[in-house]
Amino acid sequence: MSLRLDLLRHGETELGGGLRGSLDDALTANGWTQMRAAVVEGGPWDRIVSSPLQRCARFAAELGEQLNLSVHLDKDLQELHFGAWEGQSAAALMETDAEALGLFWADPYGFTPPQGEPVSAFSSRVLAAVARLQAAYAGERILLVSHGGVMRLLLAQARGLPREQLLNVEVAHGALFALTVAASGALKEGH
Image (cartoon, rainbow, N blue to C red):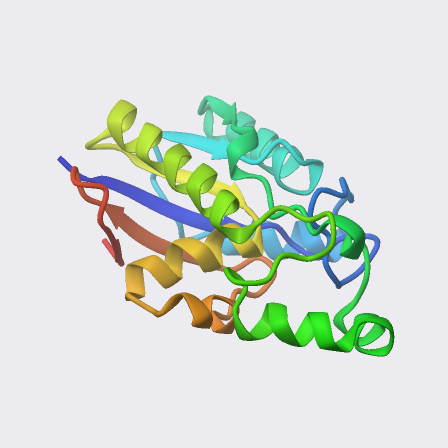
């Protein structure tokens, strides 16, 4: 039996764009508005699963309370840890580390930011978390509140994209996407 997984990216954060990674930024008022607007037509969900970082978890808690749904936090659904690049914008990195940034954009699996988490390890932990959800909640519809990197990874897999195209997947703040997770673990976009 398959699992229906709706992916919601957190909204805009107080410290702005760039590589937020493991930084625990709060949402701006606009970020809250983006997320609330995204779920107006969504659901119904059986439960909510969220990254524990506050830009995801606080909204998940609010929505869970409104809808009377349980909320489970899973650290394996956190964003990629960017190491020395955490908190920096691509524009700033172009000034200080353009060659490395170019290597990362060209093949995120083949190049790891300094002191960062390898994308292969990130992929393994995210896909393991989704497999756990599929095993525990097959037949249900879950709202997964997470990050751009997590969503890019899952959407790239569902779309069958080559690994070099991971960072080409567009995921705006407050974006909502639908996935189906088959019993085999295969991902398909849509329900």
